[in-house]
Length: 352
Image (cartoon, rainbow, N blue to C red; front, side, top):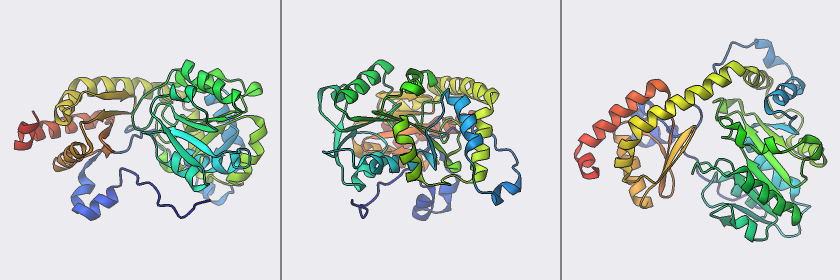
């Protein structure tokens, strides 16, 4: 076990930028987080919820209706589940080798490294069909690249895992706007593959990242051990109530998916051409909650990231890529004006 490793740096840290550049950072249009910019509206809650120990039974029933099957465990966000799986499988594996996407949410690799697993990286999902591994992590769709794998591809990787007595971990934190692409649609609770773990989150589509609620789905043989790893009360009572109400709000969910499609069309038609020019790249992937561009190199990505700061726009910078969250409807005009201003500056003319 290696619990003294340096954790990966997360994007979207406005407090860091406030310390670096001053209070002006608080006025930036923050498109660094890919959570829904038009989140589920938070209702008033009974203050008595703060006085009660959490009971997951009601949320379990609500989640079963929403997902179409009963979750195996509820955790403090999908991050809690990501942290728990390496410990769960540590005694089952003779060789601790985990394959993770080269571009992807870094906490996946880090959580396995802390438990002494060796990390191997893959670029394309088909590589998992050609190699031998003990655990493979797939992010569906990928965060931050936005790439979406087909269910046929995922089923082939799962079959490969089963043939090797290996394990496939699928992080579906961003799947809610397109639930037809979820592996949950291919599984039956009674015959759930012992090789498969699926994680779902309410932080992205619902915009409830602060509630810290995630769901794990796995075979019955793992359920008690996973629940024990996460402890008796991993989620606060008010969060259980709020998330349950969100999962039951089917009218909002339908409207939110419709609104996302409308906002995406407006963003693609009105804003993307300007960002293509600024980034000098059309190598992009459009996902329901964000768009990610691959740029010529890391230095140029950092350059335009700073240029966007000069007009008050904060994005997510990676190694040669920039991710832009889909703005709320009322934010699109503000973003458009900022980009027009940037393109009119000397730097913008050089970009153009």
